[in-house]
Length: 282
Image (tube, rainbow, N blue to C red; front, top):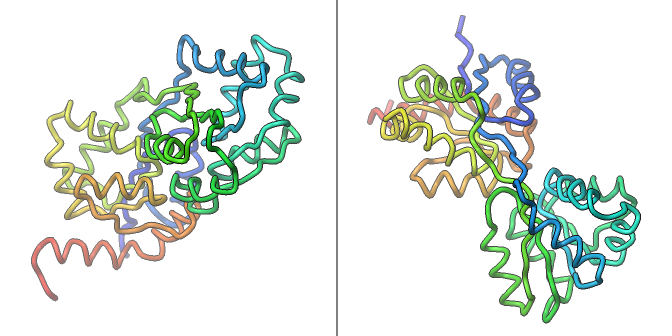
């Protein structure tokens, strides 16, 4: 009887969901949360945006994440009445990078002007924004943990006056023991596959690997021995920038599709990867 493949999940917010999906498909799952979302302490930009919004000085709003939009609203409601905020938001053309901020808007009874199609990357968002005139307009972008320089540059090239509204940052988990253990397994031959569901996870994994003096061993394993699954183009591009080939990437950038495709391809893809790494042609 073939032993189940051992799969490392780096997912944090939906770690339990990911583990259940992996086990449903017969994998031996290894949970290694790699991130936590931490609200910015001062929230200066978010509070300033609230003042701008209510003064009618925002012409276009771009929402990149649902959790970030919710966090922004929570901050603003501490200073301003909810109804005033919603009234101001209803007057704006709002662009969403994907379905999660759309879902939050729907709860508020607001319909976005444009929504980027799958795979919901900056590239699709920039194209979708062509439907909105931004030249000379004051465009505010709700950011998510890291600056989106590509989006800022694209909007600026079209003549927009771009401001950003960061509301939270990504940090390592308070307990990094599961992540350290997963890196030991990945770099030492104790795991068969790893799932990356955001580009930030890569930075955190390499940060902890460096602390363990395992960076080269980990990169070598990911390039030669471990099946690498990525949820979508942004994450996949970040992996390739580090010389890591993406072995499994679903057409639809969702966790369920990622695990399903891994289940369909894992055995053959892993054998092929290890065979090529060993130099065998059989």
